[in-house]
Length: 91
Image (cartoon, rainbow, N blue to C red; front, side, top):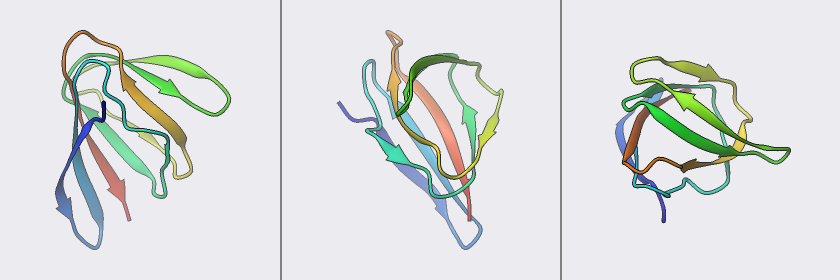
């Protein structure tokens, strides 16, 4: 099952996307082409399946983090409830 992607803003400077993951939903394997910031709207765990490893990341609502362009992963909701976050890509 795929996570639901809703683009809220796409202008010359940023793309702001809300991601909603039903339990077990995933993004599919992808590579980030821009630096980005994630703002969790829900607390819980997301499984990150990367080329070299798989790990569970614990996220807390309102506690943001950033990652550089080039990140390659699939993101999976391992919670028994919907998980949501905002992704802000910097152009």
